[in-house]
Image (tube, rainbow, N blue to C red; front, side, top):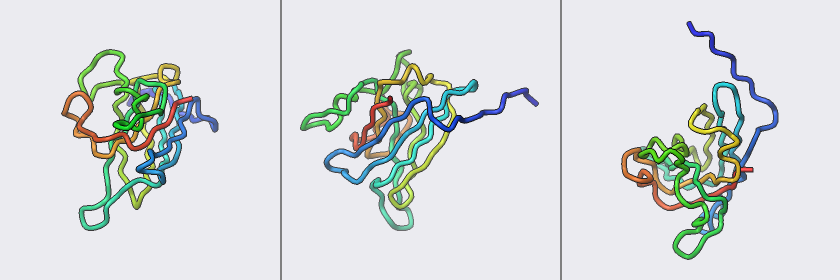
Length: 157
C-alpha cells in the first residue's frame, strides 16, 4: 500500500474554459474545469451539442487537447486558427505532448469526463485554449493524432 494523499476538490475550480462550437457546429457548448491538487490537475469536461451517429457502432469519439494559442479566433480555413497547435513545451512526440488528453466519448450529443494528469499545472495552462476536434485521436500520427478539424474552442481563464 502507498501513503497517497486523498484528492480533495474545492467547490470552485482553479481555472476553467467555456467551450463554444464553430459556425459549422453552433450547438456545441460546455465547460472544462481545472482543479490543482497535490497529485496533479483534475480536468472535468461537461460538453453538449456534440456531433454523433446512431446505430450499432455509432456514437463518436472526438480528439480533445490543450493548444498553445491564447485565442479562439479564426479564418476561412481554420475557425480556431488562434488556438495554434498542441501545447507541447518539452517538444515531445504525440501523444506525449503536455496538452494531449483522453478523447471525449459522445453519448447522444453529450460528453462528461474527469481525469487526473501531471503533464501540466493550472498556472502553466492559464491563457491557453481547449480544443475539441472532429475525429478521434489515433495517438500515433504526428504531430496531432490525425484528429481532424477544430470544431469547438474555449480559452482557459
